[in-house]
Length: 137
Image 1 (cartoon, one colour):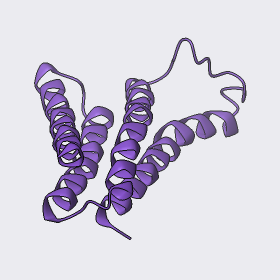
Image 2 (cartoon, helix red, strand yellow; image 1 turned 120 degrees about the horizontal axis):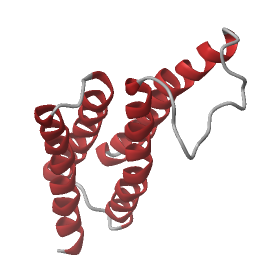
Image 3 (cartoon, helix red, strand yellow; image 1 turned 30 degrees about the vertical axis):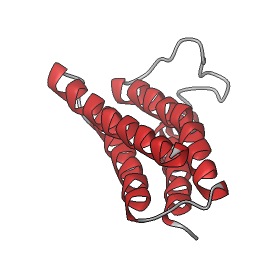
Image 4 (cartoon, one colour; image 1 turned 45 degrees about the vertical axis):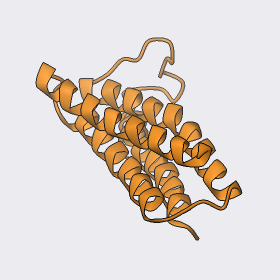
């Protein structure tokens, strides 16, 4: 399998792992401890610890960007495109996504931390555009 496809699979796996290890664990601990009913988590108004709310947003960020990366990888695959630049950009997308999520979930969101988090998003966007340019050319 080509590196971009592996990175897309890694992106999907990270999205699931992030969900299970943060939101899922938080909710199941509360449910099994009898502190919250299974239907007690309202989607329209997240309640809970700050890291839990940030986890929900970090997971949503993954869900929002996974189809974009998927479309790019599909176009690369359909066009038979690859090479070191494509591989490198794909690896950087996944690495930056993981780092963005970790910064989002693990650190209190000061201005400096948000700037770091945004930097990881910016790296992904640059890689997305670079890959799109490669596809178009």
